Length: 313
Ligand code: AKB
Image (cartoon, rainbow, N blue to C red):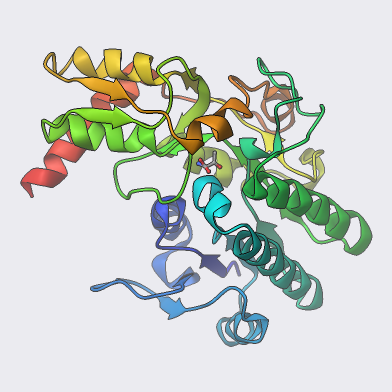
């Protein structure tokens, strides 16, 4: 019987993935964990510091966990502020999860990687699944090393660990923290608040992006695919759309003509410069039938409608 533990369950991805997993498997089969409990937190929940391997193991045993979705991590921009902590957290927590998966013979593990594994030497357009990877952020370095560990634990110890290289994720149910792609979420909130939006990236900086419902769909589809269909055991490229700040602003202006944006690129612009403009995800499409549903114009409509609705509740 499937019993899932989610780490980082109160984060941007964790909030929506936990909800989707509960809908799919039943609320009583999904244990949400995070470093702290939210006020009014609903459902099965335990406080868990992912660096604490003993407590993680105890929770796995107590709840009869069969799968872990390990989402807790420090993202790119915050990682640059505290490189050693980012490395320690991102790396050691993954090793804790992989070791528990091995010793407890868990059915499956999910671990997110990122487009941050690529670097300035990687091809910028339609970046292939296999190519030069020389990340220049600590987040990217930790994700690339993590991918190598995942493949190693699969090949050496038979751990069924699966992974996606997410682009920037955009959703309305929770806000991201510490990422370089976060502007593409805040821009919608500021536009609705009637504020002038100052973007920390340059107007022409393209980045691969994905609407949250597509990210959830991709994750569950990957985890549901038969074991033999998963041919990439490091992490799959997945893509949905690519846009620049100027383009997302233009799409918002179609709904809010007075919306104004200006640009004050900071250190995050340099991070973005090292990442791909767009991603080739042919392997995911042919191995387990990945296909996105939401493009920029639809996403803008959904984001503006749903954030407005939440503001009126
Ligand atoms: C970030 O900006 O750090 C993340 C990512 C692309 O992994 N959203």
